Length: 55
Image 1 (tube, rainbow, N blue to C red):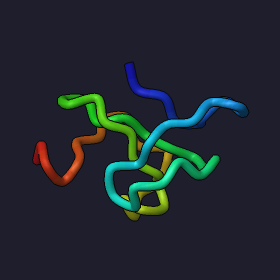
Image 2 (image 1 turned 120 degrees about the vertical axis):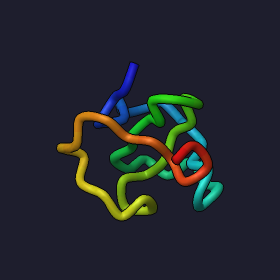
Image 3 (image 1 turned 135 degrees about the vertical axis):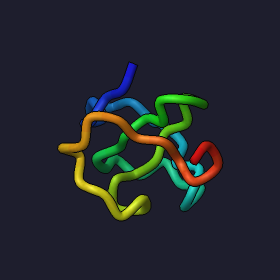
């Protein structure tokens, strides 16, 4: 399951910046890792996302 917005209070680790900042995040469809949309340089509006490790 891919979420576009992180719920307040939850902490998910971004595999790119290695931080748990409360920012908009997206989940890789293949490995299920969480990445800040800012770190990935993408819009949260995309439907399918694959991280740099899974592309």
